[in-house]
Amino acid sequence: MKLKIYKAILAILLIAFIIVLGLIIAKYFNSQKNEELNQETVETFSNINTQENEKIEMQGYEVIGIVKIPKINLEYPILNIETSNPEETKAPMKISIVKYWGGKVNDYGNLSIAGHNNHNGTMFGKTKNLEIGNIVELTDLEKRTIQYEIYDKFVTDPNDVSILATNDNSIREVTLITCTNGNKNRLILKAREIL
Image (cartoon, rainbow, N blue to C red):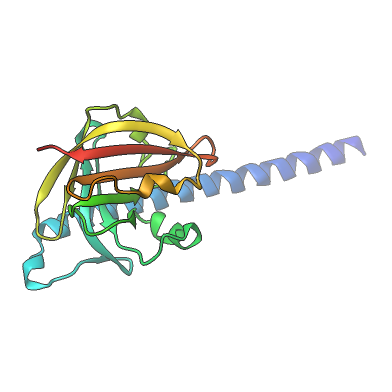
């Protein structure tokens, strides 16, 4: 009788292991596919003529620019979403980096962009390795690339909206937002245009 119970428990554990392994493999391949799509979108954005009102979309979301951070080998399209409601940003943030708040890419004032802190280092998963003085590059629809230097890095509460404020509308700023501490806090990196 005990042998049958042990065999049943072993069979259940084996099935659970196979299911978990399958889910891990599926997640890995989905992540790889998404990274390839992001890279293709960056290349397409570089080759498209936005002066002729050509638009580029990625899975139904308009691409409004490119964010590049050489220090951590990051380059992603920035998706335009019509809301800053955290619940409504979940779907596009699974795809790429999103505009969370602000005007157009490279406009004066503060542009806040958000991305997931993926454990595999994709999206904003490596931004914790950035330091004050590192460079963030934004390319807008006019193909103008502006360099921004990180001047502040801190962790805050997810409900802290003061990070979105523009202190000086005569300068260009970008705020990078990602989750940290098991999604209990937000890692914030603020950068200003290098003049």
